[in-house]
Amino acid sequence: MLNCASENRTPLSGSLPLPGIRESDVCFELLIQFVEDHAIILLDPDGLIRSWNAGAERIHGHTVPQALGRHFSCLLPPADDAYLQAMRELSQAAQDGRYAGERWHVRNDGSRFLADILLVPLRDAGGELRGYAKITRDLSHRKQLENRFCQVVQESPNAMIMINGAGSIILSNRLAEAMFGYPGDELLGMSIEKLMPERFRGRHGHLRQGFLRQPEARPMGVGRDLYGLRKDGCEFPIEIGLNPIETEAGPMVLAGIVDITARKQTQRQLETALQEKTTLLNEVHHRVKNNLQVIISLLNMQTQYVREESTRGVLQDSQARVRSMALIHQLLYERHDFSKVDLGEYLQRFNHLLLSSYGQLASGLKVELDAPAGLVCIELQRATPCGLLINELLTNAIKHAYPDGQGTIWMRLARQDERRALLVVADHGVGLPGAAPASRPNSLGLQLVPMLAEQMGARLNTLDNRPGVRVEVSFPVFGAGEGQ
Image (cartoon, rainbow, N blue to C red; front, side, top):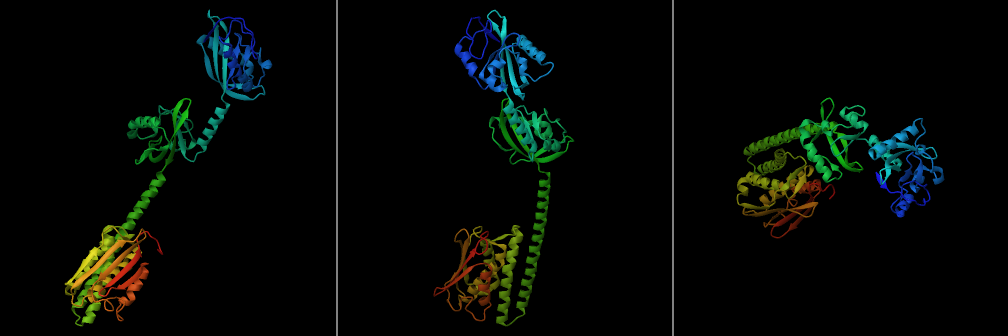
């Protein structure tokens, strides 16, 4: 309520004299006259328009001459009770000190618009009613934005729910209603906690307030499994994305909700299939390893019945080759990783197995191995030819590098770069031609070593150090791809 003292004055353009009412400052009235965002109208006690500012002309479409002197009910949609309704609003403003609300208005061209209005009684110093101030704000643009927003929410491919700071649902789309099993507008006004299992409700209010204190778009419950609760009491897994929305009524939270039941089922099926595949491959490698061990045992038994040294040597070489393949399957079986083999671990174990298999022949030899586990991994399809290649190089050095049976063999494994690794097998023995696997005309190594190097995509380089031989094998590591 405004208290105004009587004073004779000259009315400004856009106004008629309102007896007993004056602005304490002419500048204030000038300010009102030129405000364009709000329609500010002064009415006499009977509701006749006495002042019409620029905002009123813009919003309502009436010029000053058209508006002054008319009853303000002309601004309402035509109806039999428009005048009575307008007078009831004046009466309530006079009784309560103000009247505020939203209601439809009509422009001079007949178009309707929703407006936010405030009616305030104007009284003189003695408390006598001298008129009213009516402030109108056009909500058309806001309503258009709200309608577009609601349309976007409704047409969203995900279930959408908006809640206020107290956790009450103020907006939901059809997908949310279908997801949770609540028809129509039944979700509106409901506490969001009702849509979650009871075990999660206690902490949710605290989590919601924490989000509102630091509002930013983010997924909800990162690292935790989230569940929704349907009206029929069924739980189902969900994912939620949170978006803060600032409104005139305070901060809101817009949640996008996805039912991930089908995804979870698919994930479980994939995990089951992967487990079955792992079990199957594990069994396959276990059986292959065992069968290769049987072959090794048969070859070893056959060796005991052979007297010719050349034949015994062939059988021993065959055992070593089978053993190199068996160790590959043993590592796959132990590690349950069927995509790659740790070459450092393979070299450490194979070196011991090979020296033991040659017994007296290798008793005076020492192998210095520099091959850390975990440094180089090789893909499964390259693992078997790589194991056979290592066997050929090491076997050749054991059998031919040191005729007196005394000496050292060096094996080194290192990374060249992100894509390739280098294996070096070297000795200080008699050198070429006897030591090189490809130099013995009747040796199977003449055929095997280049073929195996090609199968594993390796580059082979043999150096005659005089004394000794150095063989370098450069090959792609796990994940380097083909042709590297």
